[in-house]
Length: 259
Length: 259
Image 1 (cartoon, chains in turn orange, blue):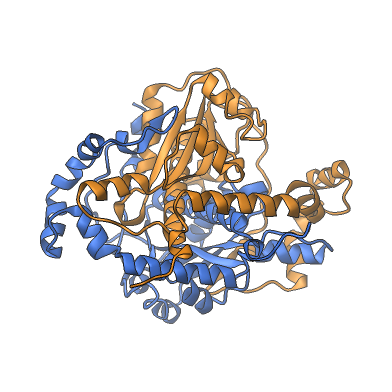
Image 2: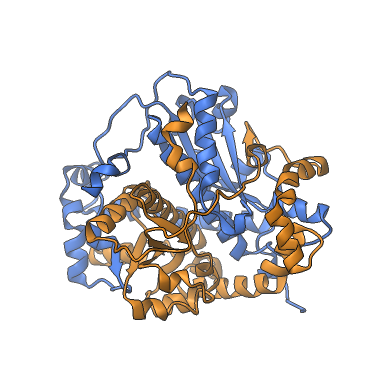
C-alpha cells in the first residue's frame, strides 16, 4: 500500500502542548536546512525565516497572537516572511534595479515563504517534533513586523510554534476528498453537492458541541457569526492592505505607468 | 545525525523530465490524501485541487505556461486554487453570509492552498515521483481560471507537474543559511553582508554561464534585465490585481464601510 509508505504525512496532527525537552541546535539546523530545500521562484529565495527562542522576546509576541499560550509555552516560535529586501539590496550593490514592489511579487514571495514553512514543518514532524500554525500573523502583520524589526519589502506570512509534543490529539476531520479535488477542470457545487459534502462534518459530535457552546443553529453560523465575523474581516483586511502598501508592495498599483 | 533521518527532504530536486511509467490511482489518491492533511485556517479548507491528466486538456494549457514542455510531457498537471466559493455556497445553504471577499482572506486561502501543495509534493517525492512548480500560474491567473472553469471567489495559486523522474539533476545551490535565517529578530543587511552572502552563488560556473549567455556583467542583472524585467513585472501585477478584483476579492477595499 502506497499510503503506508507515507503514513507519517497522513497521520500528522497539530500540536498545541509542548514538553520541556530541549530542541538541540543540530535538530533545529536540520529542520531549517529542509526549509530552504523547498522549491522557490527562480531560486531567488524571496523569504526570511525568523527563529525566536528567547522567553522574554516570545512573551512580547503573545498579545499579537491574541494570547494563544503556545507562543510562550513552545520552546521556539518561527515567523516566515515574504522578503524582497535582501534581493533589492543585492541589486543596488550590483548596479541594477528591480521592480518587484507590487502585488504580483508579494504573492510570489508569499508562496515561496509558505513552501519553505511547510517543508520546515514536515521535517520537524519527521524528527518527532510538533507544530502549530498561528493564523494571527496575517491579522497582526504590522505590529509583528515592527516587533521583529522587519524593514520595507518584508511582510510576515506564516508563524508556527515548534517543540516536542506533550499531547496526542485525535486526527482532525476533513471534508471528503470529493469536496476539494476536481478532475480535468473545476466542477461547481449544486445545493445537493454542498449538502452531501458537508453533511458528515456537520454531524460530528464536536461540530454539534460548537453550535451549542456558541448558541448557533448550525456550524456555518458558528464560523461566520462567532469565529470570523464580517466586521473583523473587513477591519483586518484594511489593516493588511495599509501595511503592505507601507511595506512598498502597491507602488505599481498606485502610480501611472509612463513606459 | 538528525539530518540523515530526513535525507530525502534535504536532497530533493525539481524534476522536469518524466518517464512513461503511469501514476496509479492508488498512488495519486495517497498523494491527494497527504495534501488535505496539511494545516489550514480554521479547518475551512479554503482551497481546491484540480488534477488534469487528459492529454488534450494539458495541451490547451501549454500556452498559459509559456510553452514549458513539462505541461504536456508530465502525466499529471495539478493546479491548486485559493477557494472561498465552496465555503460561500455552504453559508448560503445554511442561511448565513460571510464577508471574506477581501485581500486578507485571499491571502489566508493562498497560504492554505500552498501548504496543501507542498504537502502533496513531499508525499509525491516520498513515493518516488518528481515535481516541478510552474510560477507562470501567477502571471496567467485569468486565462488559466477561464480554461479550468473557475467560478468567482476562486484564484489559481500554484501549479505543479507530476510524474516519475527520467532525470537526476544535481542539487541546486542555495544561499548560505545565514542569508535567510535570523535569530530573535530581523537583522538587516549591510553592503558587506550582501557581498559575503551572495559571493559563492555568483562564483558558481553556472552563474557565470548565465551572465555570458545573457550578455550581462553580473547575475543580478541577469535577473532584473533578462528574466524578470520591470515592464513585465508591472504588466502582470496589474493583470493579477484586475483578475482578483473580478474574482471578488477586493470588494472590501473598493467600498465604504457603513457599519
